[in-house]
Image 1 (tube, rainbow, N blue to C red):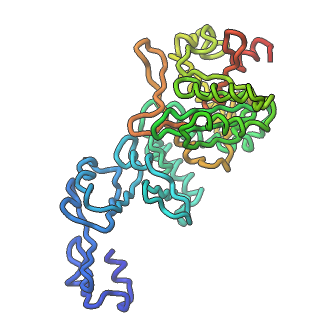
Image 2 (image 1 turned 135 degrees about the horizontal axis):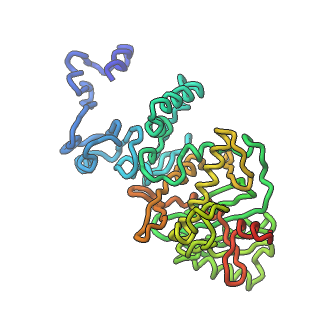
Length: 408
């Protein structure tokens, strides 16, 4: 601030302003109108005062952030947190997750936290070559998790048990173009239904191994949600639309029954219920196909949700190895995310948010929303879309199982 003021022409300074008298330690005063710019430190910054605007630097790294928030609660109506990332669950992360990413040239929202992201690519002195050199050094130093946090802004970089590492997700962006495979294959879609509160609906569509689109929206009416999803899939030919059938998602089935009864349901679209808490599919199959020494699905996974997340992890792992190591895999076993996908950064973050654990029976479980995070709705929809369940009589069968049996 001193450098800025010293660089101003005298004509721009307030009447009567003297650097010696009006720029004391951590305090600037405008003698013309009494306005001040002050600096503070400690747990009680701002307590007892009133400010038009308050900037907090590196606010993700405060030792006792809750005390700081309490002290600032009635100090100002405009609080700006500036920080590099520092893991999940702290005040900075929770505020960022609750906020809305500001779109340049759009007005700021008055009833929500506006989020502005300054990426390393926005720095005029930093190039892809700088990034590659910085990453190579972190690999050589054994500090890739620090690089992921400080440069890639990966909040989960220091979190143990992340199911899909962020670097694997990055490798999958544009993977079809990098590896030379296409979107040949059937269409599929999945609808993650909002479960109330501030949760949102999400719809993912894919063709073959290529994610074609994913979107989310706020709508408490499950009937309206069902109609929106059906309309979005109506003109894509024969396909299954899976939907979260547990709890509030049951309303989707009621609405689609009405559409069928009134002959409004597209003939090429079939709705398939998805129950994340159900027992694993192909329970007597092995986690590693063809390897009888690997655990059986029923002994390894606690439920379909864990199985689906883990299988998506394997898709991303294969894709990452194909991109970075040149290992050959079948396109059907990989995944590609479009480079122009709207909300791509949010999708990246959500896919790397879920962590893995074990239940009382030592089976794999998934924690989609670690402390301080929101439900990853778009990631959930992607997980469902790439692990489809097909109803055949009383049994639920996957594409992989059908392929093995020769039925597809």
